[in-house]
Amino acid sequence: MRNYLRHRGTLAAALFIVLQFLTPGTSSAADELSPEAQVRQITTDVMDAIKSDKALQAGDRTKALALAEQKILPYVDFREATRLAVGRAWSTATAEQQNRLVDEFRALLVRTYANAVDVYRGQTMKVQPVRMAPGATEVTVRNLYLNASGQTIPVDYSMLKTPEGWKVYDVTVDGMSLVITYRGEFGQIVRQSGIDGLLARLGEKNRPPK
Image (cartoon, rainbow, N blue to C red; front, side):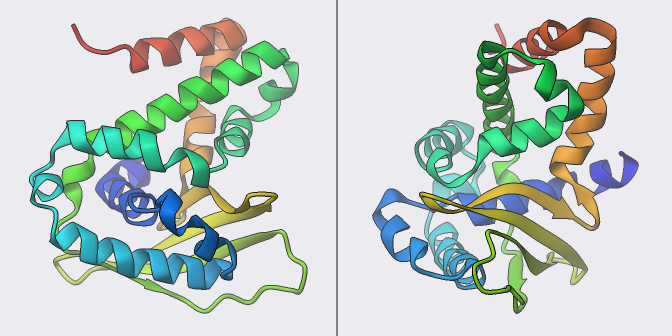
């Protein structure tokens, strides 16, 4: 957890880079690319877009939240991410509870993203070559994140091939997985209060401040 908190800004920036401009207008072309080429294309497009967007550079949370709601959902497998984050307790949840967990976890990640949008300050991401067997349906796209001080941090995107194309379901920063980090927190809540307790806690975190 300490390592995760130390790189919290890096994780937010990594999510920002890979998700910010996965627009519906480019989805058809992206679906035809390999995961490696897709991430490389997206990274290039995003870097150029951020440089020209003064509002995002200034940390406009309202604009970031609106963009996240509009553009992240089609390109992230939130159900798979939620299933992994909840862990064993997922199979004990009813279908209705599972759907509510996905909605709440999605809202949590989108809110976290919007709150941390201003961590981007001209960093770069280098996509590494991917070795993938023919017909593979799961792959890790490895990247090197270079921050303003010149520090290099590995950032990996775990992706699944779905009927709609490749989707991200986890991000790992310097060996710390996003979904596994949440799994520890969620597991403790479930042990104490059950699935309903987890839903209640997520609802509290996602409730807009008064």
